[in-house]
Length: 397
Image (cartoon, rainbow, N blue to C red; front, side):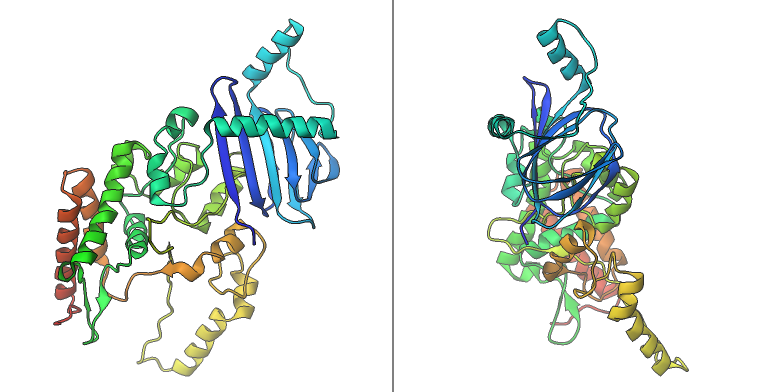
């Protein structure tokens, strides 16, 4: 499957936005824009509905949408969609019309689909030139994230976001730790658990690198400086409202897209940026089913749990978010997320309350209290082992 990417450039001189989407397979529900859209299809084939008309559109076709034109499209045979477009605000369009005609009025495209090879080639040349002026692709590495220091000035949007408080903060942190080959605590030979960072200089240095990444994101301005106190509520809302261009989240975001189709129709699912030499990772939220050994109906309960986890039930009831690789429905919120599941990491099976809070506190110590990344890594290692000791799960090794 071709990897989907989204690149957006705001041209300050022309006061337009250029977008380039590649490898897109998801359908776009009915929506409209408050600006003019001129686009072209480079590859792929789509079924387009606009203003009560249906079209089959493919390579070489020009798409024109006036503000308020309701439209939707679905994937047809012919491969993933590669699409380029210009988003032209009404004010910019009025200015262009005045320069050309000497009068000001609101133009309305009489046709939504055109086929003209000369216009198509000219469009591609102009679009590529604008993309080269200041484009920024979806970041694939930590260095990519940290290099996007001028993205906010060009687009008005922060390129990345961090959740530093609340339930998502430790979930994100174990991903960054896993990318550096670390666990928050690991199983020992005696069947108990321990954080081993302070027993291994390389592990401690890798943990310090994670805290350094948090600090560098804030210091370089690639995330909102208020991220120090952001939880998932703020990072979700900021992404939906266009204040951040990318962040770590889950397929529950589909609910946000359903409620905001115009804003989120171009969202793609990408791997979480990794450090140089790191291992790809994504968070897996596990929801186990427990059977009590004192139950009077253990056999029946086990059969029921097995059925709930089986393909038939998952396909019929939970297909849009099933962890099973053989259960899926087309679309980015299922297929694209499942494509990342081989790199899934989860918390170890220990008492997590104090550990999760310690992870949140360690981020605050770096970002709000000025603790060094090295000292924060040491502090968190001690805090995790103290929690394990209090819960009776600390290894003696």
